[in-house]
Amino acid sequence: MFNTRISELLNIKYPILQGGMAWVATHQLAAAVSNAGGLGIIAAGSLPGEIIREEIRKLKELTDKPFGVNIMLMSPYAEDIVGIVCEERVPVVTTGAGNPGKYIPKLKEHDVKVIPVVPTVSLARRVEKFGADAIIIEGTEAGGHIGELTTMSLVPQVADAVDIPIIAAGGIGDGRGFLAALALGAEGIQMGTRFVCSKEADVHINYKEAILKAKDRDALVTGRSTGHPIRVLKNKFSKEFIELENKGTDVYELAKLNVGRLKLAVRSGDVDNGSLMAGQISGLIEEIDTCEDIIQSIVTDASNIIDRLSPLKGGDKL
Ligand SMILES: Cc1cc2nc3c(=O)[nH]c(=O)nc-3n(C[C@H](O)[C@H](O)[C@H](O)COP(=O)(O)O)c2cc1C
Picture (cartoon, rainbow, N blue to C red):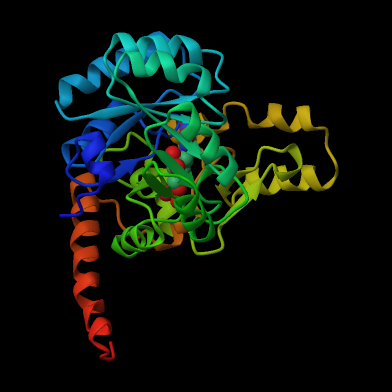
């Protein structure tokens, strides 16, 4: 069910990826998603390569299914990590924050599938030319670092502009979002926020509960004035940050303020002073479920929606 070029390319049961998420996407979460038939991804964030090598090895003890590593191209260790994923025979790499073009030849030599995360049509075209195997199109609804355009408007425009398969990300949390993404021209989805609220995510319970409590307008954007907008849940830290931005505080001062804040929320559960990265879909999430339950309910619901919509084809009313 739901076979696409993405499930075929990645050799997975369902075309559902768990987003690379700094501090959140550890080997436990990635293994659980891969074991549930999706693609689990370890996030390298700004951690040194040897820690990521350990994570990869621990993940391999928990699953024999395909998995990926997300490399943040801004990390000072990005090049090291490219070398490590080649040595460790990681099947898939996703990349954030830029164009991974210069690493693509080496990754391909080692049979690694390369899937950049892209926020615009022009970058999508460029990474296709550089040899990307697929692309993740991430809309501004997403948690974490974001672009300007919405998933709804961006996915069909990219689908018309490139031939490689597309994975939609940003604002997807259930079977409705999954099927809508396929209707827009994607052949898979990536979810971040939904998987933060999974049983297997090694994330402090306070963080998960903050997402469960969040309503539709609680995920706001900080850092627009710095050129690095980040979607987070409203809390003491995000309010103070926005006040400082409105006062015209220096960009470097603001950047310093963000250092260590995500870790503070994920590991220590400090939901007042930490950065609670999460997307607009937070308001939809009401339970902490296993990755298996999350994925199964998405495919079951999507399949039921196809049945529910079928009378439309015959001219009948829903
Ligand atoms: C806590 C958190 C941390 C994230 N860190 C990263 C990251 O390190 N690298 C990356 O490419 N994307 C990162 N993202 C984006 C996710 O991989 C994913 O694309 C996004 O969450 C999808 O949107 P959604 O949150 O609406 O599901 C992060 C997202 C969250 C919520």
